[in-house]
Amino acid sequence: MGFSINTNNLTSGLTLSINATLGNLYKSMTKLSTGLKINSAADDPAGLIISEQMRSRIASLNQEIENTSVTLNKYRTADSALLQQRRLLTDMRSNALAAANSGYNDEATRMAYQNASDDLIHSFNSLTNSTSFGNQKLLDGSEGSAADVAELENFDLSSAESAEQAVAEIDQAIAEIDRSITEVGSRQTNELESRMSNLRVEVQNLTAAESSIRDVDYAVEYSNFVRHSLLLQSGLSLMAHAQTSHSSVIKLLSS
Picture 1: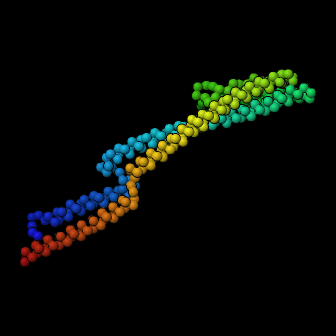
Picture 2: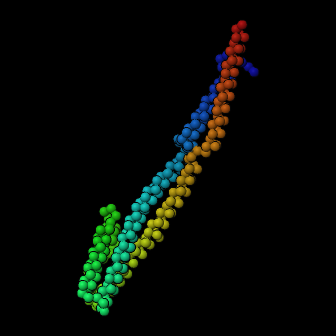
Picture 3: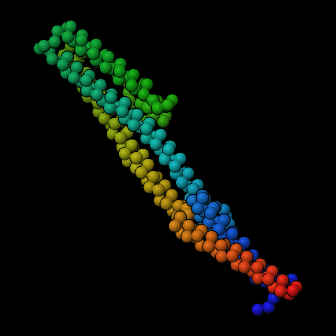
């Protein structure tokens, strides 16, 4: 093997190898510290673009999930109010049936049934006008509401005949409320909850796919880190040995 004073090819080669190993070691340390195998465009340009596109889609889906959740809560609020109105109508019907009993009721009893019915109607109409989600009314049929519930007029329970007529009117109101409950429940189950479930599945799948592209495999990367560390130690040892050999030759020539 030849020996050159001006150019030490062995040392130059070792220097390049050590610099390359230091670069690889730095990359491994960065990946292990961040948990990402793509930390810059230099790591994987195509992978970075695909990953960012997936992250953008995931962010959009999460926002849609949040919006759907808000809408779902709105319909749950409406559903709860409608069920409460349904119970009020059931109580009204019971009072009207009792008031229709001509063989038992006197005037004081009928007045008691009338007052109770008026109170129930007031509660029913109050729910229609006050049930809201934020600033949005839910039962008055306005734009964006979940249902259109008509207000009730006071029923006349002063006689058996008028009480029987009240029963018929209450039955009609119950049928309308039942339709509203069915429509609101169908919107919740068939549209909103189904949509929410589909969105969450899509987010889960995209997150897993994005993770496979961008997240580091710690076992693999730690093996790389150990390998680069050993290569660096070997390179530095060889560099020290080469420098020692170079100095020894110079001393030999100068003696």
